[in-house]
Image 1 (cartoon, rainbow over the protein chains, first blue to last red):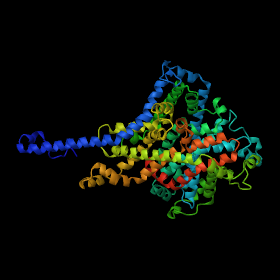
Image 2: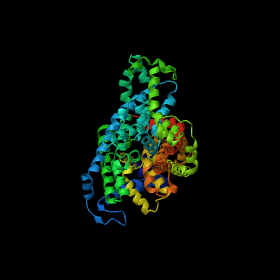
Image 3: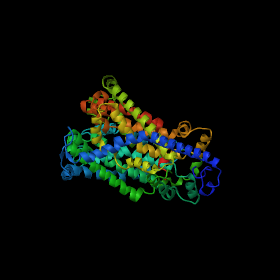
Image 4: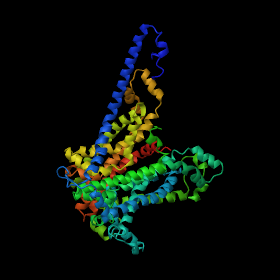
Length: 334
Length: 286
């Protein structure tokens, strides 16, 4: 667009060109300058609203979290009592926070190890062509569509002592299995992991089905003609091609698990949460920062949560995701 | 799984056919696990609380419609549904509008700093925006936005922008350059091209990001919990939570309220499912 413009003055021919030729040249460069200016007006005009909203409501709060975390501050007036990193030291000395960290680790690894295989199996199943497939797909996605709050209340009612799960277990002669599902300090985190799995496995299934529909049919056909069985085709053709989708899901699942709040908050009993058995970093942050009004401390927890997520994301990207989102991170649009 | 090995390629020539019994057995099992707890809640809403206490896992006998009627007439259900709708629509509109403008520039303009700008937006995918919820609350308080729709809509737009741009950009750059040149020859500027050609052509991607933003907003809990103290502004998720902690002994009522709250999402998703899976195909391309 710019290099082939015939009116550009080239150093060799410039001297011999008739003086009259200078006028169109000047006008052309003026047009070009106007065009460039217009382009920049468009770029700035179109991107500014998005940049302003994104910076104001995502990046600026993040910066303030770092600042506030250095103060002992009850949230009234500007923070004045500077205490350096004391809030951070306090967090890592609080056994409840350490419990929350452990619970987050259980949820991250539990989600990856349980949801992944289940979702893969279900996605391969629902990718087969059979009558009624659409209906089965819709049903499998239902838990994912429901709001976290409704899921939480729903399971709370089902799992309540003497509730329907206990009644069901008793009616099939397995009454010995009945537990205080949401009140037993040793069990509650596993109950919550089950609820989270039930809720979010549908997200993995949706992503995998989208990935599966990108696998070219010709490859499967070629493999089938070569005598590969259905299982061999899945194992050697489909799965490797799903690699990027699986890794993107793992990434999103990990970030989501680190900041999990809603389901935990609604399903677990506050007393159990305050003992650490069912707390996560996010519930701990809101309990302390917002409801107990320890704003400096809460912001320190927010920064810890942010740093852990960011480091985990960078490590994941460095070692597993690099090829998949290379375009996204280095900029090649496709 | 291995038992399915006999069902290989010929099956594909007839795209829709009856699968073998094992396929159906497994599919039914998956469906049951997903849907039975939900059915329990919906059907439980048709029982009276004493019935539920006496036999938690039973069926309604007789069917009671009073719980649903009560929620729809005496609770704040309709007001909360209205608040949810306003906030979700506002968020969706904002995300799509801001997202498509930014993605258009990132996809169709060549300029210095373009990739820096793109990386800047994609950074939002790398960390949980929810981590900054406390300072966000303080900022909204200082801006006097607490207890307003804006306190939820604006941050939700911001949180949704990274994913929106990541989904839209490849879609917008895939539209052939020739169309843009042809439009230029016809005297259409880049903005006219965006409005008259890009937007109609990218409708599927726009619908996908719109649906994702809408559902995320409709289901959101933490942000509304912190910034909407005023009960008259509460959204449905807050309403469900309030109702269940306020009427703890009214199990049947809670079941009815919870059922009614999930209905819109279920209906909405039933109509949009194909679109979501289709729209994500571009985003998860290897």
